Length: 116
Length: 114
Image 1 (cartoon, each protein chain N blue to C red):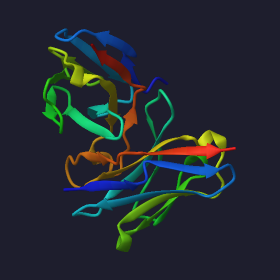
Image 2 (cartoon, rainbow over the protein chains, first blue to last red):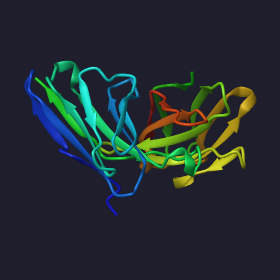
Image 3 (tube, each protein chain N blue to C red):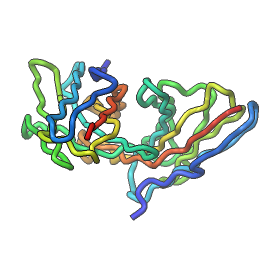
């Protein structure tokens, strides 16, 4: 009964390094999302996916790339990390609109990323 | 475009007192509204969601919210606060039709004083 699993839970990077955050869901959800959470700013959508093989930009996509090669996995990549990307990153998943418009999102426990 | 405003980034109540967390939304279409709760070092969990079937929505842990279209509000309440309610609460709105992103409020941290 895992739900949404994010790895790693913590990471410290140096400026310019690259890394990939992994999100896996076992609920057969169509939609997946990556958010960042910063103090006083709520959650901001980075990228999202409405199905396997498709991705789209959210409101703060610069500096990030994503891939969804398998329905259950959604990867977030930082090509060249910058201190401004220090944040807590959350992955979420949900059913698509065909299941009804009030489908909630299910969240992982987050990845705490520090860029030095 | 849709938006959500949560009034008060921090709210303090005494244990046993009424909890009232405010949320106002704007949406050009009938909205889908949600309240989520976030405990320290955890992700967001669904507290309740609005469906058109009823304006008063009951959620988990004794929380409820009332949808008031005339006031464009969806305030969260609980009659009696418990220490375990201390957390951050987020209101969210999603537009109808096709893919519509969810817009989250900036959150309200609830402190419960013994």
